[in-house]
Length: 117
Length: 115
Image 1 (cartoon, each protein chain N blue to C red):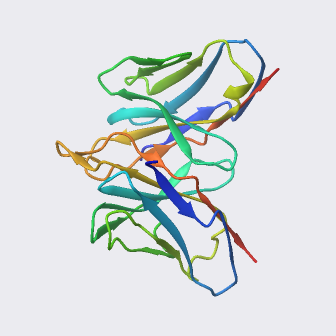
Image 2 (tube, chains in turn blue, red; image 1 turned 135 degrees about the horizontal axis):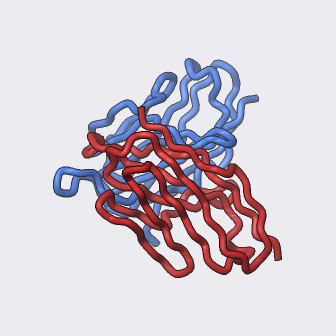
Protein backbone atom coordinates (compact mmCIF):
# COMPACT_ATOMS: atom_id res chain seq x y z
CA UNK A 1 0.00 0.00 0.00
CA UNK A 2 1.24 3.47 -0.86
CA UNK A 3 0.90 6.16 1.75
CA UNK A 4 2.33 8.10 4.64
CA UNK A 5 3.02 6.62 8.03
CA UNK A 6 3.63 8.48 11.25
CA UNK A 7 4.87 7.07 14.51
CA UNK A 8 4.24 6.89 17.31
CA UNK A 9 0.50 7.54 17.49
CA UNK A 10 0.93 9.02 20.99
CA UNK A 11 4.10 10.52 22.44
CA UNK A 12 4.78 11.81 25.92
CA UNK A 13 7.44 14.39 26.61
CA UNK A 14 9.01 15.24 29.91
CA UNK A 15 10.07 18.79 30.64
CA UNK A 16 13.45 19.60 29.14
CA UNK A 17 13.40 16.58 26.86
CA UNK A 18 13.76 16.51 23.08
CA UNK A 19 11.47 14.09 21.24
CA UNK A 20 11.40 13.01 17.61
CA UNK A 21 8.33 12.28 15.52
CA UNK A 22 8.72 9.97 12.56
CA UNK A 23 7.23 10.49 9.09
CA UNK A 24 7.79 8.06 6.22
CA UNK A 25 6.23 8.02 2.75
CA UNK A 26 6.43 5.52 -0.10
CA UNK A 27 4.67 7.70 -2.66
CA UNK A 28 7.94 8.80 -4.27
CA UNK A 29 7.03 12.40 -3.45
CA UNK A 30 9.71 15.08 -3.46
CA UNK A 31 7.97 17.52 -1.10
CA UNK A 32 7.16 16.90 2.55
CA UNK A 33 5.57 19.08 5.23
CA UNK A 34 5.00 19.22 8.97
CA UNK A 35 1.91 20.88 10.43
CA UNK A 36 0.73 21.49 13.96
CA UNK A 37 -2.97 21.40 14.87
CA UNK A 38 -4.36 22.78 18.12
CA UNK A 39 -7.94 22.19 19.30
CA UNK A 40 -10.46 24.23 17.36
CA UNK A 41 -7.80 25.61 15.07
CA UNK A 42 -6.65 24.95 11.58
CA UNK A 43 -3.26 23.55 10.67
CA UNK A 44 -0.14 25.71 10.88
CA UNK A 45 3.01 24.98 8.89
CA UNK A 46 6.13 24.19 10.92
CA UNK A 47 8.70 23.14 8.29
CA UNK A 48 8.68 21.99 4.70
CA UNK A 49 11.12 20.33 2.36
CA UNK A 50 10.98 20.43 -1.43
CA UNK A 51 13.87 18.06 -2.01
CA UNK A 52 16.33 15.86 -0.19
CA UNK A 53 18.92 17.72 1.92
CA UNK A 54 16.92 20.94 1.78
CA UNK A 55 14.24 22.32 4.09
CA UNK A 56 12.70 25.68 4.97
CA UNK A 57 11.01 27.18 8.02
CA UNK A 58 7.27 27.59 8.00
CA UNK A 59 5.21 29.97 10.10
CA UNK A 60 5.91 28.45 13.53
CA UNK A 61 9.38 26.86 13.31
CA UNK A 62 10.72 28.09 16.65
CA UNK A 63 11.44 25.20 19.02
CA UNK A 64 11.41 22.60 16.23
CA UNK A 65 14.05 21.07 13.97
CA UNK A 66 13.94 18.71 10.98
CA UNK A 67 16.22 16.76 8.67
CA UNK A 68 15.75 15.39 5.16
CA UNK A 69 18.53 12.90 4.53
CA UNK A 70 16.33 10.50 2.56
CA UNK A 71 13.54 11.19 0.11
CA UNK A 72 11.07 9.01 1.98
CA UNK A 73 11.76 10.31 5.50
CA UNK A 74 11.21 13.70 7.18
CA UNK A 75 11.54 13.43 10.98
CA UNK A 76 10.53 16.30 13.24
CA UNK A 77 12.27 16.98 16.56
CA UNK A 78 10.40 18.93 19.21
CA UNK A 79 13.10 20.52 21.32
CA UNK A 80 13.02 21.69 24.92
CA UNK A 81 12.84 25.24 23.55
CA UNK A 82 9.26 24.60 22.44
CA UNK A 83 7.38 25.69 25.56
CA UNK A 84 3.92 24.61 24.49
CA UNK A 85 4.38 21.38 22.52
CA UNK A 86 1.05 19.74 23.33
CA UNK A 87 -0.71 19.38 19.98
CA UNK A 88 -1.59 17.05 17.13
CA UNK A 89 1.21 16.85 14.56
CA UNK A 90 0.51 16.01 10.94
CA UNK A 91 2.96 15.16 8.21
CA UNK A 92 2.10 15.53 4.54
CA UNK A 93 3.71 15.03 1.16
CA UNK A 94 3.15 16.11 -2.42
CA UNK A 95 4.81 15.49 -5.76
CA UNK A 96 6.74 18.74 -5.44
CA UNK A 97 7.81 20.96 -8.29
CA UNK A 98 5.53 20.58 -11.27
CA UNK A 99 5.89 23.25 -13.93
CA UNK A 100 7.41 25.56 -11.35
CA UNK A 101 4.65 25.07 -8.78
CA UNK A 102 4.41 22.65 -5.91
CA UNK A 103 2.26 19.56 -6.51
CA UNK A 104 -1.35 20.50 -6.02
CA UNK A 105 -2.60 17.88 -3.60
CA UNK A 106 -1.00 17.15 -0.27
CA UNK A 107 -1.46 13.68 1.18
CA UNK A 108 -1.58 13.46 4.94
CA UNK A 109 -0.44 10.88 7.46
CA UNK A 110 -2.57 9.74 10.43
CA UNK A 111 -0.90 12.13 12.89
CA UNK A 112 0.97 11.96 16.20
CA UNK A 113 -0.51 13.36 19.38
CA UNK A 114 2.16 14.84 21.65
CA UNK A 115 1.42 15.26 25.33
CA UNK A 116 3.53 16.78 28.08
CA UNK A 117 3.98 14.92 31.37
CA UNK B 1 -1.86 38.56 5.58
CA UNK B 2 -4.14 35.83 4.30
CA UNK B 3 -6.72 34.63 6.81
CA UNK B 4 -9.23 31.85 6.32
CA UNK B 5 -12.44 31.64 8.35
CA UNK B 6 -15.05 28.91 8.52
CA UNK B 7 -18.53 29.42 9.88
CA UNK B 8 -20.19 27.78 11.70
CA UNK B 9 -17.66 26.03 13.95
CA UNK B 10 -20.12 23.19 14.51
CA UNK B 11 -23.29 21.98 12.81
CA UNK B 12 -25.79 19.25 13.65
CA UNK B 13 -28.37 18.09 11.12
CA UNK B 14 -30.77 15.16 10.71
CA UNK B 15 -29.92 12.48 8.19
CA UNK B 16 -31.04 13.23 4.64
CA UNK B 17 -30.76 16.99 4.89
CA UNK B 18 -28.85 19.02 2.33
CA UNK B 19 -26.33 21.37 3.91
CA UNK B 20 -23.80 24.08 3.12
CA UNK B 21 -20.49 24.75 4.81
CA UNK B 22 -18.90 28.17 4.39
CA UNK B 23 -15.32 29.31 3.98
CA UNK B 24 -14.10 32.87 3.52
CA UNK B 25 -10.63 34.23 2.83
CA UNK B 26 -9.28 37.76 3.00
CA UNK B 27 -6.93 37.86 -0.01
CA UNK B 28 -8.18 36.82 -3.43
CA UNK B 29 -4.62 36.23 -4.71
CA UNK B 30 -4.73 32.45 -4.57
CA UNK B 31 -3.70 29.54 -6.77
CA UNK B 32 -6.50 27.30 -5.54
CA UNK B 33 -8.77 26.37 -2.67
CA UNK B 34 -9.11 22.88 -1.26
CA UNK B 35 -11.63 21.17 0.99
CA UNK B 36 -10.48 18.42 3.36
CA UNK B 37 -12.23 15.98 5.66
CA UNK B 38 -10.78 15.00 9.04
CA UNK B 39 -12.18 12.20 11.17
CA UNK B 40 -11.54 12.42 14.96
CA UNK B 41 -7.90 11.80 15.79
CA UNK B 42 -7.02 11.15 12.15
CA UNK B 43 -5.21 12.83 9.30
CA UNK B 44 -6.79 14.84 6.49
CA UNK B 45 -8.32 13.50 3.31
CA UNK B 46 -8.61 15.76 0.29
CA UNK B 47 -12.20 16.05 -0.99
CA UNK B 48 -12.16 18.69 -3.70
CA UNK B 49 -9.65 21.15 -5.16
CA UNK B 50 -10.81 24.20 -7.11
CA UNK B 51 -8.31 26.12 -9.21
CA UNK B 52 -8.55 29.92 -9.09
CA UNK B 53 -9.87 29.95 -12.66
CA UNK B 54 -12.68 27.53 -11.84
CA UNK B 55 -16.10 28.19 -10.31
CA UNK B 56 -16.93 24.77 -8.92
CA UNK B 57 -15.97 21.14 -8.59
CA UNK B 58 -18.17 18.12 -7.97
CA UNK B 59 -17.54 14.67 -6.55
CA UNK B 60 -20.50 12.44 -5.85
CA UNK B 61 -22.76 14.15 -3.30
CA UNK B 62 -20.24 16.95 -2.77
CA UNK B 63 -20.12 20.21 -4.67
CA UNK B 64 -17.67 23.00 -3.91
CA UNK B 65 -17.96 26.50 -5.36
CA UNK B 66 -15.46 29.33 -5.46
CA UNK B 67 -16.10 33.06 -5.78
CA UNK B 68 -12.58 34.42 -5.72
CA UNK B 69 -13.56 38.07 -6.07
CA UNK B 70 -15.67 37.97 -2.92
CA UNK B 71 -13.31 35.63 -1.08
CA UNK B 72 -15.84 32.87 -0.52
CA UNK B 73 -16.23 29.17 -1.03
CA UNK B 74 -19.03 26.81 -0.11
CA UNK B 75 -19.12 23.05 0.26
CA UNK B 76 -22.54 21.62 -0.48
CA UNK B 77 -23.35 18.15 0.81
CA UNK B 78 -26.46 16.56 -0.63
CA UNK B 79 -28.60 13.99 1.22
CA UNK B 80 -26.35 13.89 4.26
CA UNK B 81 -25.58 10.56 5.94
CA UNK B 82 -24.25 9.68 9.42
CA UNK B 83 -21.00 8.65 7.73
CA UNK B 84 -20.52 12.28 6.68
CA UNK B 85 -19.95 13.22 10.34
CA UNK B 86 -16.44 14.70 10.53
CA UNK B 87 -14.59 18.01 10.60
CA UNK B 88 -14.35 19.78 7.26
CA UNK B 89 -11.44 22.12 6.65
CA UNK B 90 -10.84 24.50 3.80
CA UNK B 91 -7.40 25.72 2.80
CA UNK B 92 -6.08 28.20 0.25
CA UNK B 93 -2.74 28.25 -1.55
CA UNK B 94 -1.61 31.87 -1.76
CA UNK B 95 -0.06 33.25 -4.93
CA UNK B 96 3.65 33.57 -4.41
CA UNK B 97 3.77 30.30 -2.51
CA UNK B 98 4.44 28.43 -5.76
CA UNK B 99 7.41 26.30 -4.84
CA UNK B 100 6.59 25.95 -1.17
CA UNK B 101 3.23 24.24 -1.38
CA UNK B 102 2.16 26.35 1.58
CA UNK B 103 -1.50 26.10 2.56
CA UNK B 104 -3.45 28.45 4.84
CA UNK B 105 -6.16 26.57 6.73
CA UNK B 106 -9.44 27.60 8.30
CA UNK B 107 -10.40 26.38 11.75
CA UNK B 108 -12.82 23.81 10.41
CA UNK B 109 -16.54 23.04 10.76
CA UNK B 110 -17.44 19.97 12.79
CA UNK B 111 -20.47 18.28 11.28
CA UNK B 112 -22.71 15.78 13.03
CA UNK B 113 -25.38 13.99 11.02
CA UNK B 114 -27.93 12.32 13.27
CA UNK B 115 -29.65 9.07 12.16
